[in-house]
Picture 1 (cartoon, one colour):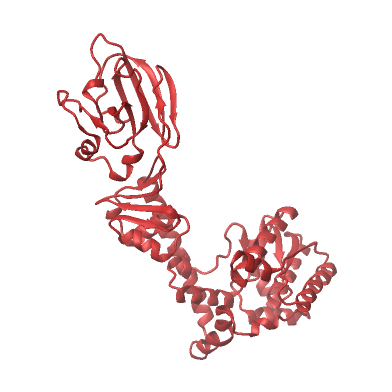
Picture 2 (cartoon, one colour):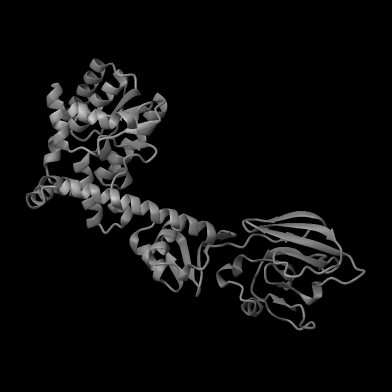
Length: 435
């Protein structure tokens, strides 16, 4: 069986019915991918468009690559989109490395070209040897299961249909069909981590482990399965334990989780975070200042993640209707019978007379409350919240109903004796919805 027949036999069931944008640099791998996709297009199995991005790095050689791809696509009757940028200038402006900048600009171009062409997938020519390089790079950088998973065959946007095949197999295919390609001489210079792996380290590894690329690809596939499995568990735990309170993200019963789940949940909560930051949060106790203005606070059980908070302006408590405390909560007020709400939490019945001239706000220094059941004796709001075991990281965001510095209701903690309802006196039902 020819390489063409073998590779097409693998690609055909995976790509039938697809609308594909093929990224073509002019190198052997991407030219092989284009020719394989053209064969599937000619069988009527997919819709095909091509794209080429000229990085402005290699001078005339780069322009010659562009012209080669244009001529190739024209001869194959494949519509082509061409993009161009000066990666060195943009990298200097953005303070990025050339590789990082080139990847960012190229991917942005490919996504736009795919949208313009009506393509639902972008096909990239990464192969088994690329996967081996990627896995080794991630391991050497200290990556976990996600890094060990390497590149995904299909991440919903980018397809890598050639991952099961080696570079040598693709070269054999091109030679079978008599298809030339362009050589990028910079790939032979070991001036980047990937080039050093490709040109020097992996060849030495293969001297001792001839099946290294297969083994690393297998390791990546196993890691991807196990990474997905742990990710599913983490999502279930997230749904069960993640909460929001006025801009604070809370992970309940965080301390009881395994280290693996802690890392997953912290990474999910923080979005972009490096390994050291994640580890500090997982292992930390008390308050930690994190990059980006975040604060992590650990209690014995829970984890709280928040940004700096500025108290919003006070809002008068309406006689009826709604009032919004910006960034904190929505208060709803309605007439109600003078009956106490037992264990009301964020809903309470308060005496209408006591609410006259009251405001909705957050706590401030000097606040006090005469707790229900203490016969009018008062104590500082701070001490009261400690007694009630109200979480410390949420106290500055807790909505309170107050007259001056006297707290009538500390939402979620309790009400004042002075605001309790009395039989035969008008009452109001207050409900707070935390943002």
